[in-house]
Image 1 (spheres, rainbow, N blue to C red):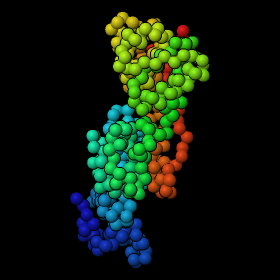
Image 2: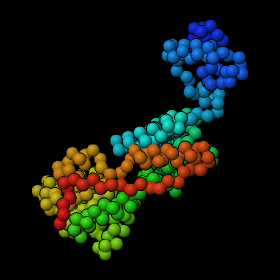
Image 3: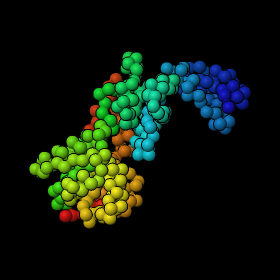
Image 4: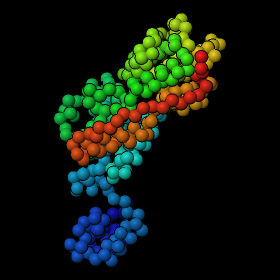
Amino acid sequence: MIGLKDIALEVGVSKATVSLVLNNGNVHGRMISPEVSARVRAAAERLGYVPNEMVRSMIKGRSHTIALLASFDPFMLPIIQGYSDMAAEHGYSLRLISVGNDVNAALRKALEYRAEGIAALSLDPQLRRTISPDFYQRDIPTLGLSQETRQGNPFFDQTGSAALAADYLVGLGHRRIVCRHTSSEIANTRLDGYRQTMARHNLAPLEILEDDGVSPLLSLQPDAVFCTSDRLALQLMQELYARRIFVPEAFSIMGFGNTDAAELSSPSLTTVNEPYYETGRDCCLSLLHHIKYGEPLDLPKRLGTIIQRNSTTRK
């Protein structure tokens, strides 16, 4: 690996001079001519010198690093890209750390990286409860790690977007709209949105858990089913097909998330698109504001958009 000594030998100057030039020190105050400075930079580029950011951070006391803890499900990739792009725009690098089953080990790794801020994506509530109390004594800006945090992206309106989905089904003329959901935190926030829409239209809410199976759902005689995730919707369509019940002829089905499988299913799934990339940028911007100014930036929550496909039809 090329170091400062190699550049110094190449140019014929001291190692201290090379360090001063490459670390943007007070070159002129040390009587280093612009010509020598240019030769040092040219040699560094020619030799392929890469600065050691860890050493640089120890010298300056700043790492310009954000640690992002996640389980790295496929849907998280656009969020991570949003984080990475926003961090880079502000001169920060992003360290990705897999949470696994030990969130405290992941946090220790973030501290080893001297991260100036630590964020977590959709951290499981049970894992969040295992975070060592000692961690919260550290004066490090965080996002998604506090015990009060609800699962999901803090800058995405889960409830409002689910209400929008139910409104869409009502707009198609459906009245017996069943909500198929799980018992997760995110599913419950989306269930709230469904309930709000049903109440606003004076319609009776019809709710069923995934574990209840298909037969109890069919007994509700729905003309539409809103599922709180694409997975639930695609699973339901598969089980209905096995019974020779076809969608949307029997009833409309709508998902949430706009995963890749939603577009490839038959019929293709009408769903809610979550702006993963944009909300990743929002999260990172808020954390950067916390790092620089001592408090997170309060940004408006984004609404999802309806992606109309073939699993829904007008009644």
